Image 1: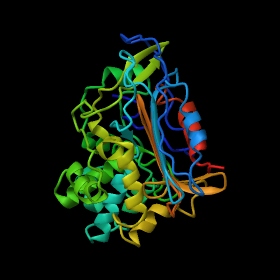
Image 2: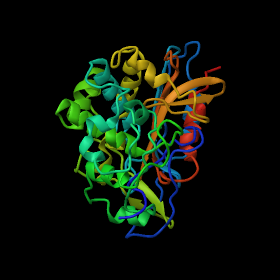
Image 3: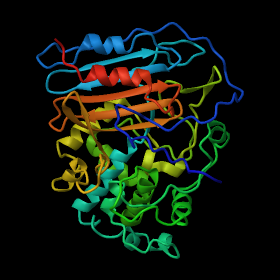
Image 4: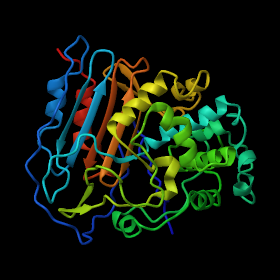
Length: 394
């Protein structure tokens, strides 16, 4: 293996500028070609109260699907002023059936919000010391490596650890696609990263990488004695009421109702719905719904999952690192003068975003079946949704 191991630095720039890494090679791989079906109209529920979301702008943001940018989109906007939810596009390109609004999808790096909440909950319970070095918790992984300086749990949470990405299948879609059913464990990914040595001294820079949360997942397992999936479900998913969210592990399928994901390669749509991503369980392997992610935001920001002062870690960006925007599990984003705390994620065929004002006056959750889920630029449909979701009705 070479290059970077399924490492997807999706939020090295603000959410409104990019969602994923570049698709560096476009090769036809037995692609299933299908004509774009007629767009399914957006469906919406609007509460016309002062400060409500702009329903017209949101409906307009979803028009024209499917197209070359996305085959479907699901959106939920809420807050103290009112709510809106809608969907557009198709369930799959073969049938052209209407997209399922309550579909499950690959949530990508929004998984990190759950992982951060799990670790902070363990910290609140006295099982994890945020200032303690990860080397103390996972000594076998670090034994014989060049990581002599202590790396705190907090530095893993806010991506200031200095641990590099490690090995992977390569950056090209062709390479990733060829290995989509191969199983690599989080321990293997962590070991490959640690053999490379530090990229920088801990706490001196911020570099968003999956490897930080891969190690946090291993930490959770060491401390609790449970699998990461069991611990995160017990400490976060169940208390938040996320009944339709789960971690697939080595199962390539999306269980339950879902819209199929596609990647546009050389003008043809490659079905990428089935994929094994067990190597990044704690960093980006969650399957969820827009309603469940909305529940996560609400329960988290209200302090029902993580108590203070640990919750403050999720709203604290390192003040001494120039250009830092990441906190523990979230990113600070400013749109139209309003500060939001959110997270995006992308896997081939699926692009997801969650964000909320600290006081929950506005919450935004979307899932776009993007055909360029790892493009350099932000997916146009996701961009329209973000801009529309931050506007108030007039």
